Image 1 (cartoon, rainbow, N blue to C red):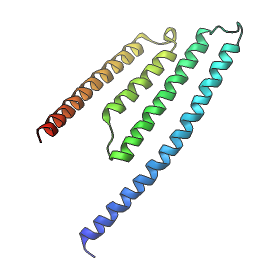
Image 2 (cartoon, one colour):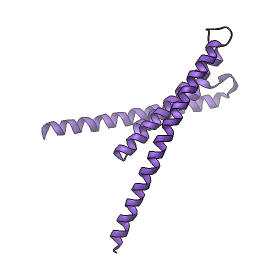
Image 3 (cartoon, rainbow, N blue to C red):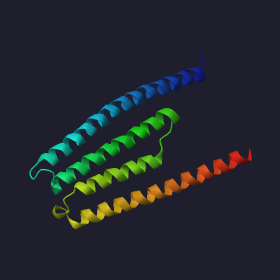
Length: 155
């Protein structure tokens, strides 16, 4: 057995192991998203049934929005796992979008009256940096896709 055979076998094992782990994560994430969606529904019903019936209080509304965005983060994470499983690559654009949604969720449920102004400036800087990163990555992806489409038309 040569070094190349042993390396090849080891890489094959690692690839198989990755597939098993990602498949398990996809299955678990599907269950988590389903349960979180049911929890959002339960939360909406409980908030609507609270006195005064039919009107949502601000606290309840913030809880609902926070849970809703948490489900969206889960869906984005599932999309990232699926893309990795199918294409063997992580889509950086989706990771940026997921981070933006997660930060937006945190911003929505924050009680800004309790926070130091420097923390708010830090959160604003984080949102700005993530937005700029998302824009740059999306622009790059769009340019690459346009080049590929132009190349396939010529060939």
